[in-house]
Image (cartoon, rainbow, N blue to C red; front, top):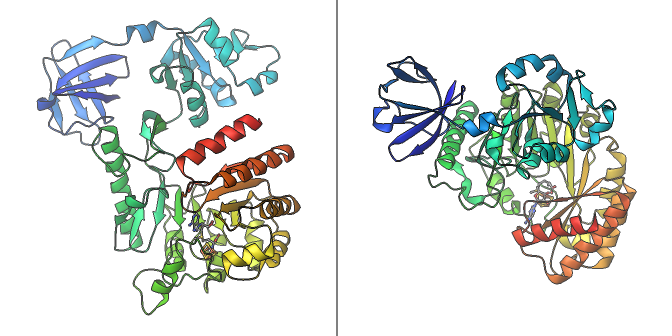
Length: 487
Ligand SMILES: C[S@@+](CC[C@H](N)C(=O)[O-])C[C@H]1O[C@@H](n2cnc3c(N)ncnc32)[C@H](O)[C@@H]1O
Ligand code: SF4
């Protein structure tokens, strides 16, 4: 296996898995060489051929190739392993064949206590990352985990990406974000590869299967464009960052976040960005599938009915949807996990039942107030106490339940509401507070003071703080700094 690792002018650089760098002329390529493409390289003394992996007929006759040994310095560097697991122990000798003998094994600080002998196989020292880099500051670290995203992030803070390698994880170093490649915001006549950028909508139509296939084509192209520096809608997104991201496009999050025909809501929140669409979608015949029809069809497609797929219901108020019970009947039959975004004003027996299945990723409720008066002023309906009653009635004890506060200038930016909200968080046993602004509107000084107040209280009680993506970037940094200062 080999890969196109760089394209410079007319020269294509291919890295092979036996640590060679092959240069071929772009004009010799029968296929369009793209960064990251997997190829196969065969060579003897006189001839080298490069084959594009998915299209074996496309041969590149690259006879005068310049093959040089690469990264001699990397090869000569000490090898360290990161992470001990049963699987790693079982495959150890296979790994050594691939990488060469490791000098030692790194374990996460919290896990070191599990290895009192500090030795693996009576041969390799087990040490912390700090200790390892002190002994071998120039080492190449091979991560043994299958899921290595957090480890990769941790390592990137200490060493260059070229020195981080993966034995099992399917990660590559490129620009990416936590949505790209696995997330679809499914809408009535378009989709988006994330739920952040309003300008990333892609018009689509046809059957549900055709729309999903369209998403996949679009995403492959988008990732390829980003890798190759071609302009894309993602270019100025603050979430697009260099890092290790999955190589594979693999849909595992299907989000219903804007309204579909038939979607309704029983509240009229002053800030709601989808509220005006309820009228459009329910005035006469509207083309497009209802949420129920879409979910029902998706559930019958084995490629999407998988236990690693999460469905997010945050369109309209699903408990007020006329098909609510039928939607739950479908959910019960699938393998999906589900994230619910609900205003909690309505109690539904089937929702309560679903919460007991252990398949709820989380439940998010935007309370935004600490008093019935403020709640009514924002939501236009007087049901603050009903919401609190429902939060206690639903079996949320074993569910990741989050309460949101959207700070609204001159409406809920006062101590009475913030403290009232915090008391409810504690009263209902909520473990995470979700801080938001109204669609990225920058926080005022007064709001910032209240944010600090909320974070300090939460810290004392061990309640987590999460941030919505609708926060202005300067406030995002502000919240991170407060969280770090308080810690
Ligand atoms: C449109 S609502 C639909 C789900 C449900 N009815 C609810 O209110 O939780 C989905 C989410 O969008 C959030 N939202 C709506 N308008 C917003 C705005 N202008 N700024 C930030 N978040 C907003 C709500 O707080 C809610 O968490
Ligand atoms: S409850 Fe949700 S959907 Fe309904 S108006 Fe409020 S934010 Fe919008």
